[in-house]
Image (cartoon, rainbow, N blue to C red; front, side, top):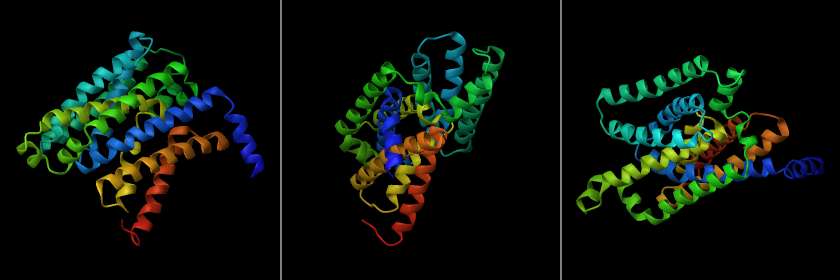
Length: 281
């Protein structure tokens, strides 16, 4: 035990590990807060669809040689988030078809663009890192941490300021609209915030695994908690602990950071599912 603690202390003395932990916790917290909303509103498809489209946008930014890809990826992903949300509210088949075409098409086009206009000699490694977050989280600098902190602060502030309205829109959109709440505006806010979380989280778990950060903590909390506030708090705790444990395991076992965090989320889901058979709060 002492040797493990000493090893952790040694690794956490490096700034890049500290940056990874800070960013991991902030992204996990934001993902958990809005993940509960997306799951309850049955908008979970947004996370999966946007993660694919964000990869395509990232490929375009890479080819254009943009110094900070977020300035290209975020606007494109935000616009597509609103589009997907509007389509997702349509129960017809064409809504699902549009989602599948956009998400899979973005992945294919993005990978093709990177192959036609390679930005580095190791295309396969770059794509793997982008898709699964293999190493990018360990190459963060102070600017990346600052950007993540600003975005996280905005996301958390929006959630707290509009908590009552978001709660109403989440559980009964028709009643909320009848009471004068602009449900379309709040749905757009949810979509745009989800896009922000997706883009920022690409450095943590990669574009293919982002939806796990959004869905798993919320589903885990719902196994035990029935109230909205209890579910949100529990989801946030599960997400943060999973991120911290995933990063620690990644450091000690030399495993990819993204998959390690996702595996921890899966283990918590299994644990909460079993516990939920005996305990309901």
